[in-house]
Length: 239
Image (cartoon, rainbow, N blue to C red; front, side, top):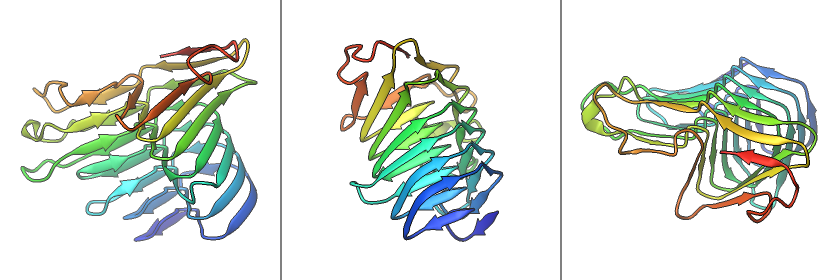
């Protein structure tokens, strides 16, 4: 499925959906947000994997390779599924290779692997801003490992084709947080961050590359690990 000059390659939700069951594979939004889903109102439960979804543009901002969530801050979305090889690509600004959460509360039980946010500008104009290889969050998002291990692996930010003098901003190879992120691991389970990378222009130093292998937590962001920094759930979070 695809949306051209629109949002949500498979679903653009303006109403109330209680349950969605099924995988979202290879959906796309061109010049829009949410390669698979754009949610403006309420989606309560999603059970399924998101694989190879993409949002792309050469002019408009693009956010959320798989999901763009722009609902009311009191609405809750529960997702049980993996996010694999989703992407957000734009010439200068790309946020959230898998999920862009602009508002609302999301709970996810699933792996995030090989998702990416990508800027392609190769001229001498414009500023470059690439954030959240897997997740860009301005609301609240919680990762729950209560019945399985969860891995953030191989997610990345890319600005390798950008001219070095742009000094591109790359924040959070796995997660860029400007809201609240919670990482919760139950007894005997782990949340692991490994191999989340950045691609900078040739000759460019990493001055503007922040916390590439894990989480970039903005000055306004709140990061909760097992509730309060104490292993209240007895699991392990490896950053």
